[in-house]
Image (cartoon, rainbow, N blue to C red; front, side, top):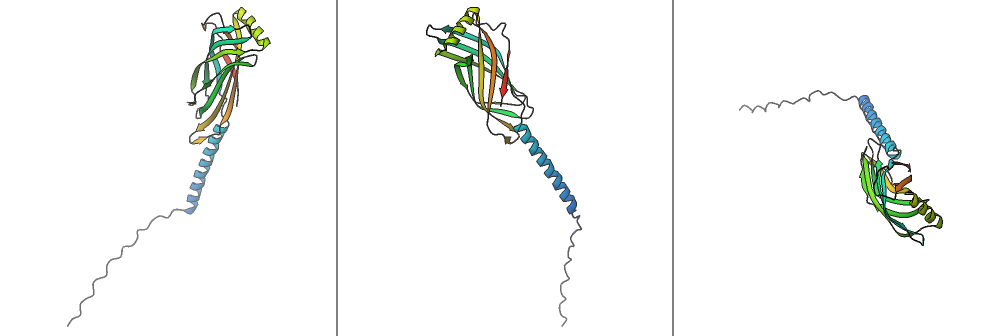
Length: 207
């Protein structure tokens, strides 16, 4: 009896020769990518922490129902149009809060809180607001000075802006900071509500 033949051996597939990555090239590529990421992070941090100064101007101003009582109390409605400009190309500004006040010789007579808003890069934002003084006490000097200015037809006021802001570029946001702007002198015609002849006022800002 003839013994059965063993089954033929199965062919073994040899792995295809592949190209191994050079470890030196991998290290170089990793270092280049790391350097780019670090450079980008430094750039973003610099733009966010050292942004350009925001620009503010008073574009228009008028007053209504202006009156000073015998007891040196003032009542009036001050209307202001303020323009805020963000000069940054890649950084946006978030206004978390804003307070606008108006004063005469550093004595505040009215103020108003402005709702939070966001300002995109290279954006101009117009803020139209009315500040109301209702029976606000004045110093003897300011009451006398305002009466004289009212007789001349033009009063000299100041506008103060205080805001809490933060800057954002890409996914990085800075901590909140306090922005202050002083706009003076703001010359307002009390004889008419017209804005004709009003001279735009540049504001000094500090962050």
